[in-house]
Image 1 (cartoon, protein in one colour):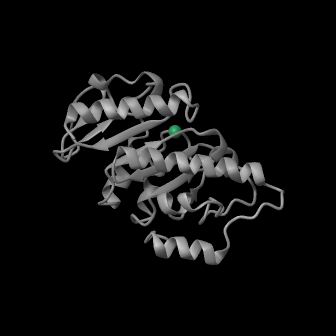
Image 2 (cartoon, helix red, strand yellow):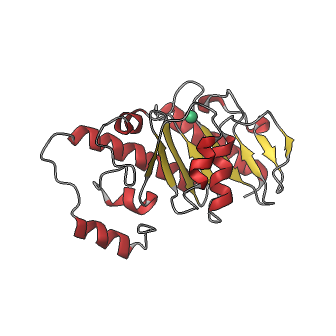
Length: 215
Ligand code: ZN
């Protein structure tokens, strides 16, 4: 995809997320690998509803900023995924309501944040790691992602929001939507006798769709 097409695609998908309330105000940030090995990143302080393709922060393949507005202050989160996962072509971070609510539950499982409710969350996200609370912009968030050594494509920052890497911008956006939707299902069914997937069903999804699960 050309630089121009990628810029427009990023802004279109960000606006779609914003328009459906998946992130709000000036929250959320998005980045994608360019054909030349560089990065396009949403600028700091911008709203997903009004990103300007021409003003995205542009980095070259060595990570040097070459044009556009200054990038999001959550940049260390993005570079942590690119540096540890060679398959990462895009990273999306949202402040999404239901996943944040689920992260506050006292029984949240830090190693397997999302309950196994539907196959698509398993297929698109693998096991989601719940990371502790960090102050906004704390570079230690990036350090925590690096500590996972590339073994997870999706993390949940407690009391903050999800961060998901995908092979491209479309895959990353689809996966973060799946995370938020599953968190919503988990809250809707919380305290009920709803049946999630059995261990055997989870195993079957993992095997059939070759999911990164046991790493
Ligand atoms: Zn954030």
